[in-house]
Image (cartoon, rainbow, N blue to C red; front, side, top):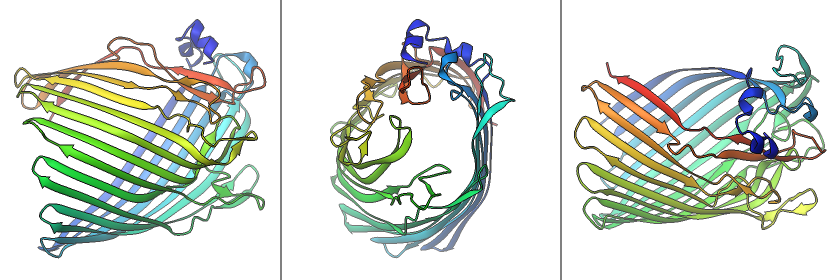
Length: 437
C-alpha cells in the first residue's frame, strides 16, 4: 500500500488481496554415504534432487489509477541436481585434513504475466507477458581445509575453495539467447584462529573471502546483448575479532568486532528500476551477546548488534554519486532479549523481545528511514508425557503496529516511484499438539 492508503486503513490490503494466493510444491530426494574406510580416514557423500514449483498470484495495490503493473502472476519451475563428496584424514592428534568437491546443475523456468485492473483480479486473462525465460546455472567447486592444533591452547584452521559457474538463458518470447556472465575461477581463501588461554576465555579471529554473483533469468546476469557490460563476481573480504568469556558460573558472554569489504557489489536499484552496480561497499559492526543460567529453572539471554553499511567507491544512479550513502535495507541495530522459566519438568514459559532500527529504503537515501519496530513473543509449553506436548504461542504479544516498507517504481500515480508498505502481522495465537512416535 501507499503511505496514504496505510494511514487511512492499514487492513485494506486484505480487501484488494482477497483473491490472491500461492501454490507451492517442494520435493527433495537424496542418497547419503558415510564410510569409515579405516580408523583415521572417513568418506562422506550426498547425491540429491530438488524440485521447486511456485505459482504466485498477487495484487500489489487497489488503486485503478496505477496501471496494470501491480497485478501479476509469477510462476517458477526449478530443478536442481547435485553431488557433493568429502574425504577427511586424521593424520595425527595435531593435524586433520579434509577436502572435497561439489557439483550442482540447475534447470529453471520463470514466467510472469500482467493483468488489467479489477477487484477481484481475473488471473486467467493476462494482458501482457513480461517473462517467459528458460535458464540454466551450473556450479562446480573444490575445497581443502586443515585443522591444526599448533599448541595445547592454539588452534588454526586454514582453507581454500574455488568455484566456477556456467549457464545460459533463452527468452522464449523473442528467441533471444545469452550466456551467463563469465566469472572465471572464484578463489576463496580463509584462515581462522582460536586461542584458549584458560577454560573460561577464548580469543578468536577469522579472515576469509566469499562472493556474490548476479541473479535472475535475464540481463545483466546473462549476456543477451553484444553491448552489455560484463560484471565480475563481487568478492567479499571479511575479518572478525572476538572474545568469549565465562567470568561466572552459568554466565557466557561474547564480544566481536567485524568488517566486510565488497568489490563491485550489485543490487536491485529501486530508484532506477534496473539492476546496476553499487560499487565498492564496506559493512562493519559490533556484536554483543550474553547468556545466564541463573538457576536450574531460569535462563536469560540478550544480544545487541550495531552495524553500518556504506558505499565507499561508487557507480552512479540517476547521475548522482552513491559514495558515502548507506546501503539500503540495512538497519543500524538489531536486538534480542529473552527469559525462559521452567518451574518443573512439565512446564516451560518463554518471553522474548526483538527489535531493529530504521533503515533507508532507496539507494540515494532520499526517501527517509523506515522499518523500526519492537515486538514481543510469548510461548508456553506443557509436557503431557514423554512423547506429547501442548504448545501455545502468541506472536506480537502487545499487538504493535509495524510494517515492511520499500521503494518501488511499479506504482505510477504521479509518474514517479514512491515508498510502498506491507503491514506486519498483528497479534496471532497458535495452539499446537506435538507427538513423537
